[in-house]
Image (tube, rainbow over all chains, first blue to last red; front, side, top):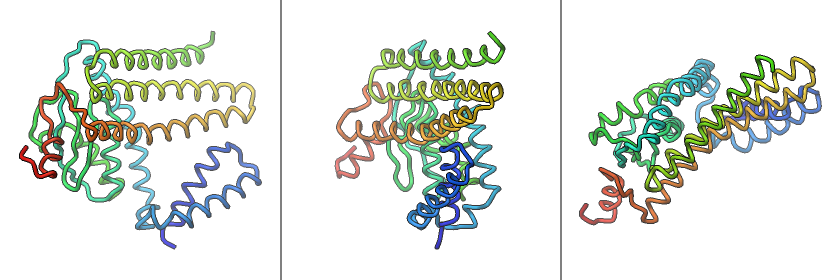
Length: 161
Length: 126
């Protein structure tokens, strides 16, 4: 029965948010749907129940979302806006080492990199990410890692590892 | 116009400005990879502000009228925003990889490490 509870909980919260009402009818259908989803998908989505239900990790996830929206996105957007206006850019695909182990953490880092303007992950293998960078300042993988994704990896480790 | 309406219009204005810059980027940049930066990203930030405007409007109406349908409106936009945040980078990543694998090379690129890797996998000298 691995993973049923965290998956069902997440599905239930999404269901209630989406129906937007707390009438008994909606709550009961929500529980039925959430349990169904949890039983079907739980074992594929969760490897460790205690880790998935750990509130500290969820708090880090919320902090990460706020930091990402307010600091990382804004900084990257301003940079790209300047490049759009001035037309001064220097693109290329660089190799960046992946320093996180679990699949969820890799997904979070890769999606965070892609969602900030100026960097798009083209492909990902076991050791390296191939990142299209709008302004290549270095071709050294370690230095590129520091500039592109060091902060994301710190948060990814706290949330998923 | 009340103060809250100024906030809503400010958010909508920021949204339009970002989307406008995104469409400028399509003309400004020269090939598919750099256009991805402008087109997909500026629209994300714009959409975040559009959703914020909807949420502020809905909460404001909820305070005035007390009608629960406005709560539903705010929650729906929030769920849509989260779905967008998860799917947008996945789509951008898929477009970039598909473009590279179907032979569109980054023209102005100073370095193409991915091409080197693909050639090594095919057994050609880079």
